[in-house]
Image 1 (tube, chains in turn cyan, brown):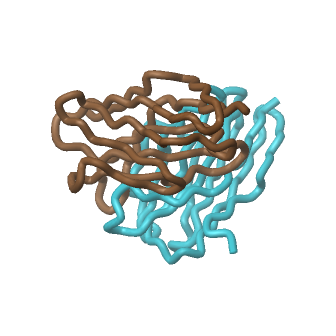
Image 2 (cartoon, rainbow over the protein chains, first blue to last red):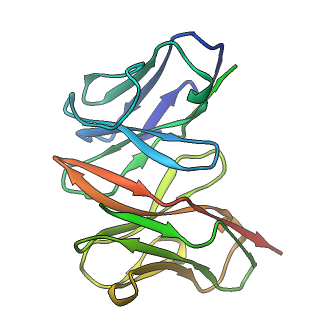
Length: 113
Length: 115
């Protein structure tokens, strides 16, 4: 069983469209994250949720909106996609008390044309 | 603020030879440091972590790292490289926000292993 699963794996879309990426974890963790990896492999945190509550919100455009319907799911909705949004987006989860030990999904490669 | 610097963007070794991936950190207090590995088209996986216990930390797949406060370094080593070690390696420092780990990643070192 995949511990942290993201869908879709690839997403190709036009500028201006709205798209969502879904993430689910079956590890029973209470904290979930979204990270963005750019074309130079640089990874940066975007958001973190703990038990459906937003606790980390980095400097990310308002067009990005995370939603956590329950603690096993964290989705990412992106409005009015721009060329610069092209990247690989990783979902991750962790358990309280396990500092720095994150379990990552395999990523969603977003290409905005 | 905490940060990490990976000194090499690309390292190439022959199979069976030692691996050294270098990382320096900057922190105003005792940091929690990690190495993560990313194989092609995969998510990241934790290799090992240092959280102020033993300074020599052993991880998975034969990797280890030594925390040296005097040198502000946390280099990753392996005695003998294997072809399957070819991947991108990230040195990471972690802060905490509430119950969440806020990871700050280095820029990555791509390890190439040749026959």
